[in-house]
Image 1 (cartoon, rainbow over the protein chains, first blue to last red):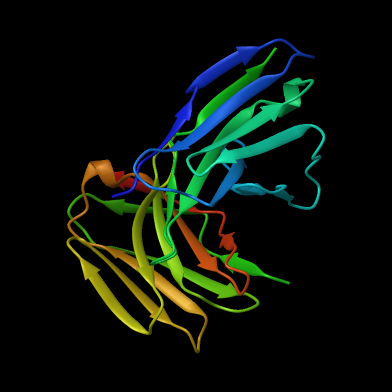
Image 2: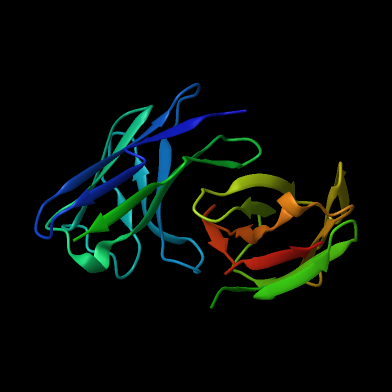
Length: 115
Length: 109
């Protein structure tokens, strides 16, 4: 099956700093990637849809200036959490989908802790 | 609005069978997914149904009734490693996945 990687797996940063998370499709090209956030004991929350070569589409309530998404190539999308705050501490997961059968493949996730 | 309902938590015994239900109301329908998620890990794909009926894959089966907006995931011969959250998700009209809150399945020896 298709493989999606994420880097880093976990990161601890200080409040006010920025953190970049990379999402790569290793054996397929993904024109669209999705970024999710998951708080403990809650379901996945879609943050934004990342489209290669164009601007990301953000879900309602997600600040696009705080969560910068760049999809520079067909195999890489990055999420940068700017001016991080402790409430941004969460599990961030990316996914990419193939056209058929509309199945999404998830990266292993990045655990962000802001101190 | 769009919503997906599934039980918050279920408990079953090792070796038994458990059925996790999911009902949905979405704008458009392009298929329903079941994912398994162990604590601290990303979801992994279990099944995809787009037509009515039962899809069997080893110990796991998934059923869909589009007219009723209903699906279930059936797990047979439960093993301790099946303890996880099971997420139901519907691919809506704009091909966006709408997620349920997940069902935490606890397996007891």
